[in-house]
Length: 147
Image 1 (cartoon, rainbow, N blue to C red):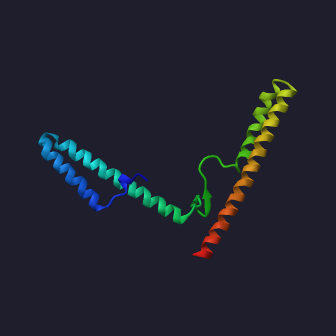
Image 2: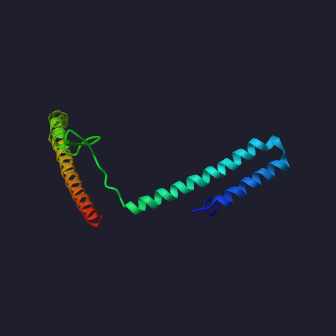
Image 3: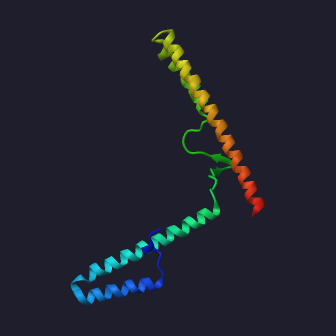
């Protein structure tokens, strides 16, 4: 952290005194520029303090598990669900097979290889999602034991 931002009330007073002394030397025509400069320094110090406190609190809490929104007892997920992807790929399989078969047997085989690949990737993603959820539950159980 920048040492200029790690200040107490005495440094704020010293900055204010310096701004007032500068105003006396330069005159009233520079007053708004001096006030803006002083306020920007105060703002930067406040921002740094807030960021430091937020970082300290986040560090104390540890990594927070993501919680999907619940609606009617079910988890609601945003975007495409990896569980609906295999079903969706099978719905599109018929027209894609027709398009791929226009290129012959190799086109149809390539189409079905793509469909199988999509389904395989969805199965792997579901497995990883379940494992992540199990780890989150174990972490939450451990946290509740220590709390």
